[in-house]
Image 1 (cartoon, helix red, strand yellow):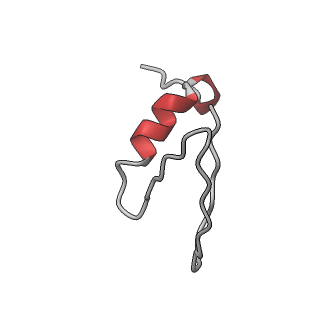
Image 2 (tube, helix red, strand yellow):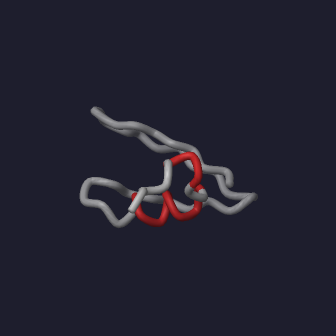
Image 3 (cartoon, one colour):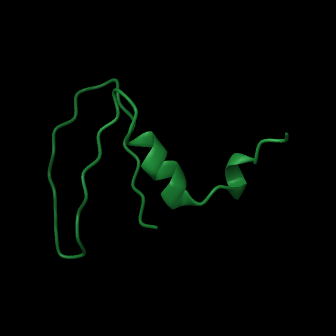
Length: 50
């Protein structure tokens, strides 16, 4: 059985799986929300507007 390529998996499905993982956190902001946050590394900050 051939696995799908990551580029073929919808962003929403990738996001849903990633936020289940240990060490991953997720914050939802609505269209009128704003956040200012201090992040101590190491860290990746990914913005998903999909």
